[in-house]
Image (cartoon, rainbow, N blue to C red; front, side):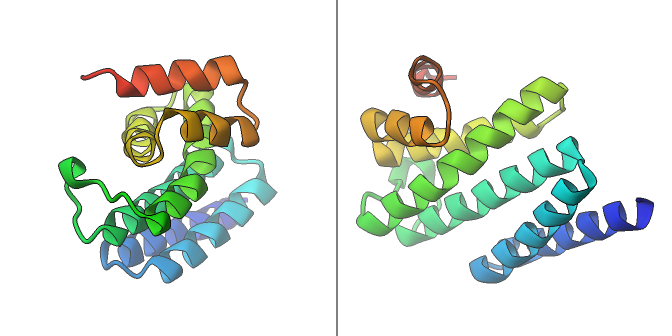
Length: 151
């Protein structure tokens, strides 16, 4: 069990390195491998982290699709929208898991990515995407409302 958990952690960290270099496909490959191991082990904390990391990769790709990484200049194009649709289910699932586990910084990071997706997608598309991911409409609307509020 320990060696497999270590392997998942190392794979996830390699994915983070690729993400920092903008090598999105490699980042996703390693994060998906880490996720598969954490699911096999039943590690809910690891699974939440991996899902959050995968969502974060999609958010990074979304931001890069606009050619700018500043929140004020969020991309508004089809590619960015497609990537946001991929990010939301991963981030929403990770957020729910982190909150259930009472886990540290994960919820803040998930909310940050979800907030960017909401701005790119618009409220209706965001809520519909959350619903497709298995989140109740009322909860998706509450999440959208909370994310839209200024800090």
